[in-house]
Amino acid sequence: MALALQTFATVKDANTALRAQGTRYLGGGTLVVRAANEGDVSVSGLVRSTDPALSAIAVAGGKVRIGASVTMAAIARHPDLGALAKAARSVGGPAIRNMATVGGNLFAPAPYGDFTVALLALDATVGTEDGETPIGTFLAGRDGSRAIVTSVSCTLPKADSFRFLKVSRVKPKGVSVLSIAAILEQAADGTVSSARIALGCMADRPIRAKSAEKALLGKSLDQNGIAAALAAATEGIAPITDPIASAWYRAEVLPVHLGRLLLT
Amino acid sequence: MAKVPVQFTLNGSEKAEFIDSGTTLLNALRDKVGDTSPKGGCHQGTCGACSVIIDGELRLSCLTLAETCNGTTITTTSGLSESGVLHPLQRAFLDTFATQCGFCTPGMIMAAKVLLDHTPNPSRDEVVEALSGNICRCTGYEPIIQAVLTAARANSQNAA
Ligand SMILES: Cc1cc2nc3c(=O)[nH]c(=O)nc-3n(C[C@H](O)[C@H](O)[C@H](O)COP(=O)(O)OP(=O)(O)OC[C@H]3O[C@@H](n4cnc5c(N)ncnc54)[C@H](O)[C@@H]3O)c2cc1C
Ligand code: FES
Ligand code: FES
Image (tube, rainbow over all chains, first blue to last red):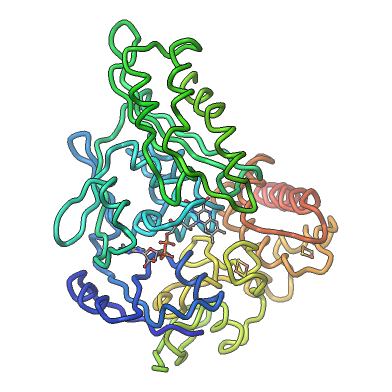
């Protein structure tokens, strides 16, 4: 079914048009046009904004603001975003990365949303015309959200404090069995002074592994030090089942991959 | 359905069409413009058969709305040969038996072309990565990878 597309120069006008029943915002279209091609009749119209701010990346004072229309390919090749490149490169094949936007990734249901897993670990904020929302709050309420996301912002991690891992069966590209992002800070004696860990495919959207984070505090990053965190990693998860892996399998392998990530 | 005007440069020629709003670029190219080189395999973004190059970037024409391509430059496989002489990639695909039914071939060639435009002498891993969004059900991937490496060698010999 063809969908009428309305294009607006400003986000404000696009937001107004988006209030109409049956309209959805068009990012890169990799999920929303795919749904229309598949015969999803819940969408009757698409709206987009060509505001250049949506495609801008601004790095200043150790922070980055990424416009919602910025693609995974643009993040992966940006000279100042080396720390995020691995997560951006984990999304689909080359053509998908040239189309998939940061804004769209925030709405992608599991097994998708790999870049959002990284943003959740990085404690990003999500910008709309109404202001900034912490990413956890945004993700919890995303199904009812109608406002256009204009940007995501976060503090750029130090290269050695941020770790990202996507596990897939088909290499080099393939849908996630699971993905994990972690930002870890260590005290002078090597023990963990702060930890944020985010998981993909362990619920219908990216979630934090809060028990594992707590269990890491004050511990060293060796086999003994991480044991309690690995035991706690499956607390509160409800993994998805899809053709790639069952919920049981995902839960079984989570501690294995988390262990590898923490020990690298 | 509202008709909207769309203009772009396709393989060096200016095109101007009125299309139904929401038409995919794949359908616009095949049904309106008459360029049937991009193939519709899955219409889901997974097979890569519909791949085209838009302003130098590889894109899936099945997931791209034609009206978002206004003012762009689009290259498809049918624009690669010059005066009846096949592009080195086309030649290599034929010579190294990298095509059987040929359905995936235009998409493979577009993905390979973007790679060679940026990386004239790619490693095998770079070829695998560049083709990772394209599915072939006939040849297996090895002949295709070899074809791209062969075309890269042919190009570097031409340049020498
Ligand atoms: C073959 C294939 C492979 C894929 N592989 C991966 C993968 O490995 N990892 C992964 O994470 N994803 C993957 N995806 C899913 C998808 O490509 C990405 O998640 C992508 O980032 C979605 O962004 P988009 O701009 O294309 O979204 P769109 O399809 O444009 O939009 C998706 C949803 O988000 C809404 N939306 C988009 N932008 C905004 C905005 N700015 N404000 C408000 N709402 C908005 C839309 O209305 C829609 O509901 C894959 C998809 C395909 C087809
Ligand atoms: S037809 Fe576009 S990816 Fe398969
Ligand atoms: S040659 Fe038949 S699908 Fe590739």
